[in-house]
Length: 216
Ligand code: NAP
Image (cartoon, rainbow, N blue to C red; front, side, top):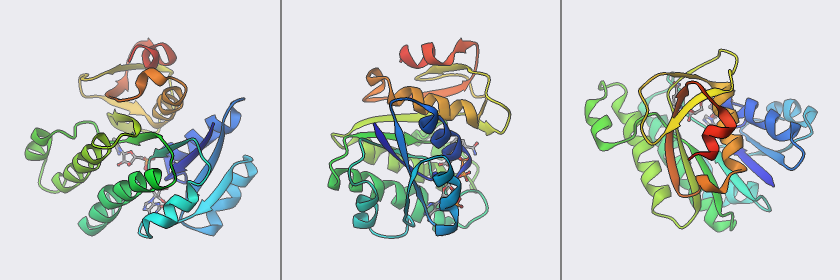
């Protein structure tokens, strides 16, 4: 499979492109927003496409031309304003979903937030609520399509080394999870069609990662 990783230059994105390039059956196309970010991915043997998520659906669709799957792991991050929450976490995600349809790419994996329920929007501290709302509506948009989607809801992300041991289910107790393990769960989901049409939370746990993903 050729996989377009949107947000490839991010922390999960870099782990994921590494896993894809190390695999036998898959190759990555890294969607990045600056040309100077390309050499990192070229050294891994990955293709690159330079597109800013504030550009149009057609630009993203062009980046997705010929791929078999799209992973959305971009995010505006905590250091930008609410404008970027709307433009990247919500509209950037929705435009990527629409681009998938335009480019006729059926498989779509969304890296969401831990809890994107309506109740979670209401319960979130006011500074965090717009982000949860953005992720809620992006997830809903994806679920309303006929794409082969998987929505992954990771707990609080850490930069610890991955342990390969996770807990994965529709609902798990809130906890942390290394970005490296989240990347491995995304990678495992790409290889497991049983994850299609599903959404699940993931935190660190005691189940071997590949078995946990297969159990979804
Ligand atoms: P990250 O390191 O901040 O990476 C985000 C990526 O999005 C970066 O590569 C960034 O590009 C890219 N991006 C931002 N604006 C863009 C734009 N306009 N056009 C194209 N790309 C753009 O994030 P992460 O730690 O890997 O996390 C990935 C995802 O997990 C995010 O969606 C986040 O919302 C979600 N999440 C986070 C937590 C948490 O605890 N923090 C928990 C659950 C889920 P540059 O590299 O060019 O800046």
